[in-house]
Length: 280
Image 1 (tube, rainbow, N blue to C red):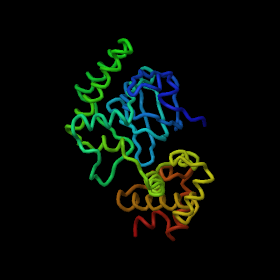
Image 2: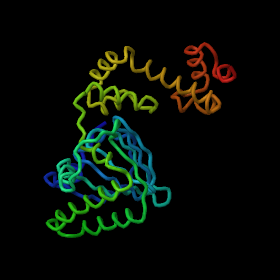
Image 3: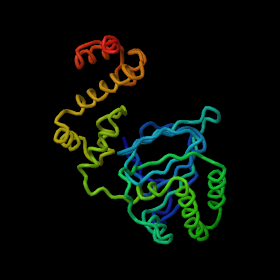
Image 4: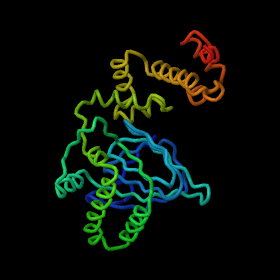
């Protein structure tokens, strides 16, 4: 699958540190490989969106919007049932602008938070809805005016969200993971229950498939297929015991095409059938 680089392939000026784009489509995409060259607010207007990053994943409808860190992700876009359209107002901005924001308001440039993520989800409110409308109005102005106003609009949205969310989402944008091995492990651990292919996981890890397999076996002492199967079967045991789910309700979620294959794999790992395990 061809990788799409954004915002470059939207015919936007790559020299601009902040740009907006009113993206509309009548074509759905599924787990499209995306390389974000800038941090991006995706203000979803119509349809639904699902994203997978190295350490986080979200599925949203148009009651929510996303903040996505620059880097590799997989993206699914589905059309609205009502209008059969997909629409998202994209607000791209560079790390340099994030540093400028932190310096201007005399904020720390690091966080004591234990965990920072590559994407964050927020709910719309009346303020955010008016904010998005203002972005669309600004997009109709001359390019020279846009440049100056958009810097102020970026500060506005970051300050507003930080007021009730704290600054961790800002720090996440400029966090560089020097420990690539640790980042690789986190990518695997955070996607252990997501039904992603080896190729998709390789893309999120920014590796070739052969390098991915080699690094995987070095770190997890198992083949990817066996490791992921074990993790999903362990999760199925949790669902059976703690949430009292029926085997017929979860076998597809765990990644099996039919119930009999799931029962066979479960018994091979735990020594009993799912029903026997549940009643023990």
